[in-house]
Image (cartoon, rainbow, N blue to C red; front, side, top):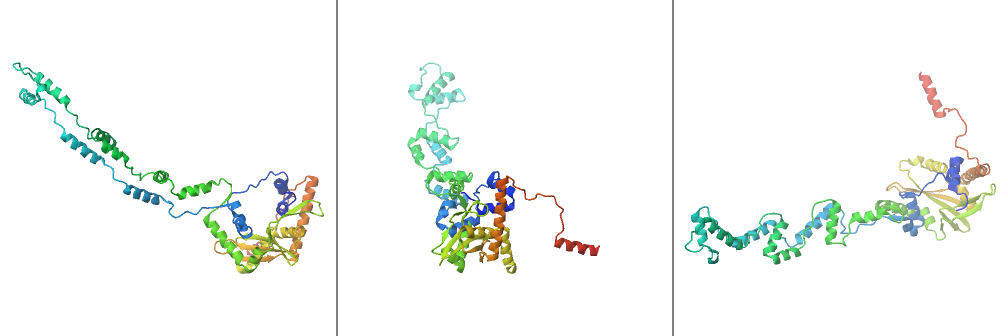
Length: 410
């Protein structure tokens, strides 16, 4: 936007060198951070809650029944596995194979002696007793007949190896049973990384919700919004509640005639420079134009007696009074207030502070002085550093008193 803003005037009060680098040459770039600024979140909730989703992405709520830990994954897997029809174990398959082998006719022994060989030969079916009667029954000839017979017998299946190897053997003798076994669902693995367990659960229930995946998708932040955790949102909502319940702040923030972050443009009469302002809040009360800025602070450890002085210091140090004076002049405001709210967890007090006439005058004089310096910088191209002269460091009053006390002791 055209025009010098109050933020730019404050930067010039840091030094003209800084103003030039930030806003003229733009060699100092402040990028928008995706890290949450609680002040921005409170601003959105208190001033424009309807626009919250446009700027912020709130951590998704984990639905009931979603898997959150390895233990919940393991619990599901165990229950799933227990519900499956039992698979044949390796021992079960081995027993079936051995039972089958036991039904097979035994091989005829070759015999260790001629007599044993002859006894086996005599038990062969006739068609395998090929030695002609009346000829000599040699051991070699009889063994050849026995071997010929043994080859015709069904071979026993193997009964050793892995479960898969045993299943292959079972398929030879009972393919129907193996086909039935193949129809059964295999149990899910119960070991591995959390990612492994997630994939296992997905294989049987693709629609299941995983907390990790919900949160990972949120953290990817494809829309580039500011991420807000549930805890941060809870804190901000508590701050919003404190503001709305405060008798004065609540009226200002919910007034029917209020306008939020309206931009005003003008010309600085003395320098001719364009200026722009955008107060947080403004409202018209019977012809009286009132402006306000909402400020979040952290003053949990400031004693009550010193709080007003601390808030005054906050206004002066951060040039809030200068902004207020600039707002009042450019936006034609008659009164200006600050709505301070403490953001520390569970300690959300509110202070409504009006800018006095003298405070606004101080801000206006400092504003005009700085505008003259900015105009001179544009005219001359000279943007002075914050320190331009060599100097000797002197003791302040406190240091002088310490010095005098030590001199007495010396």
